[in-house]
Image 1: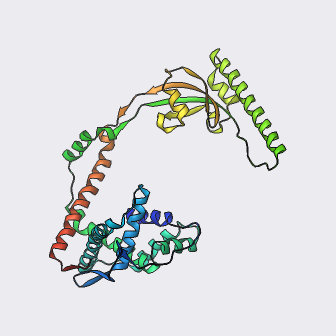
Image 2: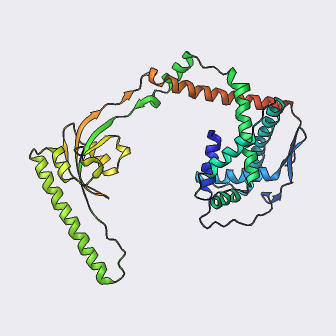
Image 3: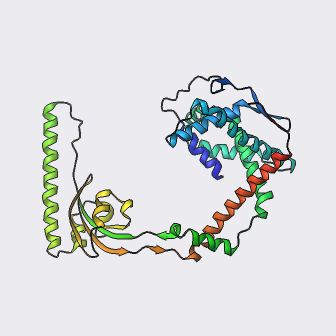
Amino acid sequence: MTRKILIFIFFLYALVLPSGLIAKEKPFTLNGKPVPKVVAKVNGVSVTSKILERELFAFRIRARQMGKEVKPMDEPTIGRELLKEVVGRELVVQKAKSLGITITEEKVESQIKNIEDQFPSHEGFLTALAFQHMSIEALKNKIHRTLLEDELMRREIAPKVDVNDEETQKYYKDNKSRFTKPVLYRVNHIHLATVKPSGEAEDEASKKKAARLTKMINEEAKEKINSLLRKVKAGGNFAELAKEFSEDEASREQGGYLGDLHPDSTIPEIGKEMLKLKEGETSGVIQSQFGYHILKLDEIIPSKLIPFEETKTDIMNLLLKKKTRELFTKYVEDLGNKADIQVFI
């Protein structure tokens, strides 16, 4: 399954309405102006407004996910830009077909099945499609076009793309921050959990009883963690104390070992505290939303630049993809310059 189709699956899945209801279809307009049924012709082949409407709908969703809204006054400009992309895809399909490239029905059906399998039910799959103004047939056409584009790129562009060692080394030198492992902290902890009032009790007496029980449990945890801290400060074996008393099942059997952590990769209270410790030191009692903790910092692992040889293949693949996309964009532009294209919006 190609990355483009995987992204499409994610997008479809994000569009499933919890209620399962689909809004009534409205006439397609750009800033209030009706859009003709045929928005463009590419070498005589009509591009319908339905395709453009789906593209604009998807654009709105992406914009919303980034905290932006498409204003009505901007719709015509955005619509024309999206139409350029649609026209480009039609040019690609026509070129692929002229070269005798074909995609079997079985391959398309396989992709459809892979997409549907990501949904909990057939109805959920259809709901997501309908919400995006798309039918099964339209989805098949979209997948067919995507696979044609991939095959055209593989035949026409990929053989012309090359990345040499000099380019790879230059990218490595210019982007060393991308290949630098951050400072990590090898941390252990002893953890005692606290509880929060459930809030499920209906009558006042039950609520008070639950509150008293919660307070009792949390006070007991506080007394116990302070007792453990005194043992740690008196020279007690941290790993043995963690194995015996810590309530973190994931780390207890490893003597409280949490991992090699970056401050941003753990809960804020632990991340903040471990920066204050020197190797071999233990913290005081730390309270988080999960309860009480005592930390022990075993080692500060310095920032490290990953050797070029370990990243060379990844860089080469990245540059190959980048060059392929750039050459393909130019290839489609050239197709457009030779084509008969009429735009009606």
